[in-house]
Amino acid sequence: MNATGEVTDRKGRGRRIILWRHGQTAWNVERRFQGTTDVELTDTGLGQARRAARLLASLRPDAIISSDLQRAAHTAAELASLTGLDVTRDEGLRETYAGVWQGLTHEEIIARFGEEYAAWKRGEAVRRGGGELETEVADRAAPVVLRHVEKLPEDGTLVVVSHGGTIRTTIGRLLGLEARHWESLGGLSNCCWSVLGEGARGWRLLEHNAGTLPEPVLGDDD
Image (tube, rainbow, N blue to C red; front, top):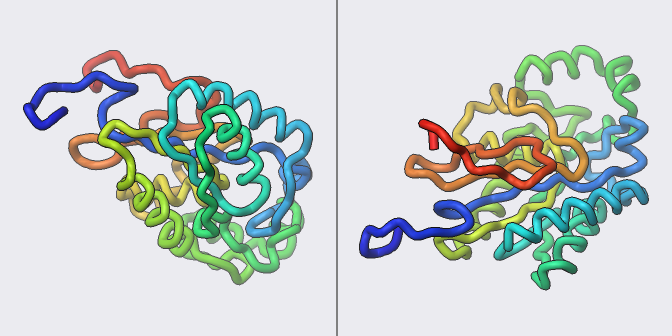
C-alpha cells in the first residue's frame, strides 16, 4: 500500500524473506553433525545450488546475505552470479555450534549422548555437545536478518543463505513462537528454502521446505 492508500502491485505484498539452506555436503550424506565445521559442497551440492539459483533469480531478489561458512557462501555465489548482486557474509548466520557433537554421526550421538539428545527432542533447552542453545542461535541470527530487511524497499526481497538449524530457529523467532515449538517447523532439505512474508500483524510463514517457485495463496486466507 502506498502513501495514498492504494494497493500497489508487486512480486507479493510487503517485504519478503527467503531463507535458503546450502547444498549437499559429504557430511550430510554421512549424517554427521556439521555445526560450525567448515565442510565444502559436494559436486551434487553444487549442482543443487545452480538449479535452485535459477529458480530464485526469477524472484528478482534485492539483496543476498550468507553465512561465512563455505557451504553456504558457495551456494549464495551461484545466485549472485545470476543476479549480479553482491553477497554480504556474516558469521552470525552460521550453523549451531555443537561442541563435541560436531563430526559425530547421528548414531554416534545417540549412543554417547542419548539422554541429552532425547531432552533436546522434547524441546528442553540443551547445550548439545556443550555448545549453543537454540535461543542463542536465534539471538545472533535473527537480528542480522532484520537489519538487512530494514534496508529493503517496501516490496523488497531478501535471500538469506544459511543452515538448517539456524534457519529453523530464525523462523521461530521471527514468527514469535515459543522456543519449545521451533522443532515443529521441521527440517529443510539441501538447497530448499522457506519464505516469510510481511503481514499486517508481523511475519507469516508462506512456504516451508520448498524446492519450486512459491505459488500465490488463492482462497479465504489470502
